Length: 257
Image (cartoon, rainbow, N blue to C red; front, side, top):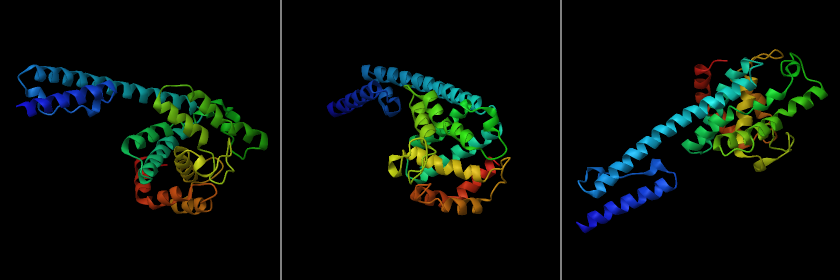
């Protein structure tokens, strides 16, 4: 009996510690709520509290997702085509993150944060953003600022999601060899999320039609990107992405270009 009581107390102690740390999902009381004593009563109360917290957290997640979606829509309002680009790009990024070994929660965080990669384009004049031809040097200089504008919009927040979005917005145009922008970071000095999104972003841009170019096939896009292996792109990430061609095809079927 003492050992059973000790076990019950140990479970309750672990549950209280998890709750104190904010890890409600780790609370596991097993059969304790069935006890017909004070411990069972306390376990029932904890179970009810955790269920309430879970409901509230689900509501907060939905509100967070809605807020981010509206932010992205505001940034992309000038060009509705980019909304489809964002959906595909975020799925490609999540696929590559999984293949790179990230856990489910990190994959989901990156997927949602990657939708904000171009939020800084809200600060780019429409005549530059929608120009059908190539940009001149002055226009290109303005366009490149969208990385820093996006990071500024997302900066100084306690939100883990917006912090992740800030990193991606700032670094997804950096290149493996240091020739990218805005800071010319190279190799693993570029955050992993930025390197992943660089691959996903360029692939979707290549396989999408634009006023100044046709949509390339998947095979053509892979060939073009292979020329940037080890210069533009992290070589290992590019290899993982290309090896996921079957999943890429499924994403394209679900969110057609």
